[in-house]
Length: 68
Image 1 (tube, rainbow, N blue to C red):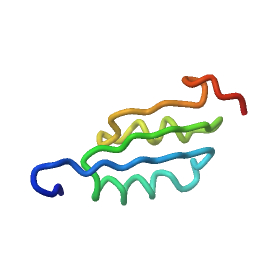
Image 2: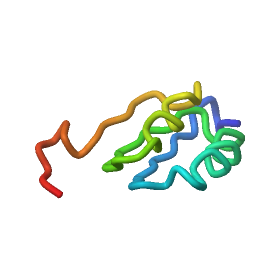
Image 3: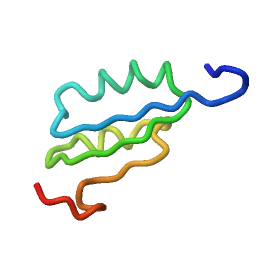
């Protein structure tokens, strides 16, 4: 899953994708060693994303003081 011993890292930016994010994460998890996510949802999207072991870091808009 990596090239020359280097991990393959994915970045995911989401907002209110609870209806499709599990399917997306199932597919992405096959291709990346680590996924980093920035989320600004007010639904169950963050809970679904964080349930995947490949997710190594997750932040929300609130972590950065971004008003929406």
